[in-house]
Image (cartoon, rainbow, N blue to C red; front, side, top):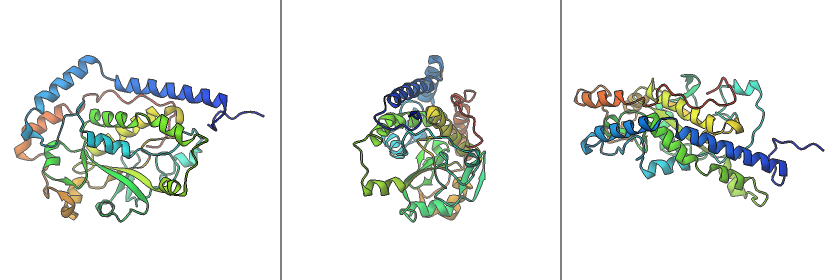
Length: 309
């Protein structure tokens, strides 16, 4: 009887060899992602970070954008990882083109989507995000994270309750790669013969984990970094397509501008600093200049070409 090399059933010698090859390939991808920039580029970026963020007044809750992301943010990213198993399955073209399905094509989006734009980014309203914060989706959403892609002075002037401030590709890359460490071992444990999921764990598996990106208007910075995260995710899991660590990603429609207008009571502090605020003109110039340390370097291409985000 022929052995299916894509079933990933424990106990198969050939399947075990495939797992080792996939693990080795994923490690190589992670190394390549970590070393996208040259040492000279990294030294220059670190030096720039020290020059522009040495003053506490410029960003009280900001810790740099290359190697000093706070532990709380890294733990939040790790907590938001999908618990899906590492299964490579063929995906029909009709599923790939279905705008109602999340990134791994396993199920429909749990939040009501207002529209789809920015190359398949699914937009949710301020009312929906407010309901999410208030716990009105707690029966179907286990955990979520709001990622504020505005500059630190904007974030410090007022942000959505619970949001974390990540505004560069370097920050997104560090948070993603740190959070993805050890995911292969987790998947292997989940698929081992001795692991028999209980009813409580099965119920937990059905709950969603999701990310919501935004910037001031969700027109450029938020969409760009959301796509960047998905690119890293696709690259790391290229051999396990369509597996993703973060399959359900949303974009806040209208950004902080819309949310603050409709739900100011859910913003801390209760304020709104515009990107082009006159008092922060110099900081805007600095952040804009160093926003794209690897702008011309795209994430590593995956082996599959898809029409979906």
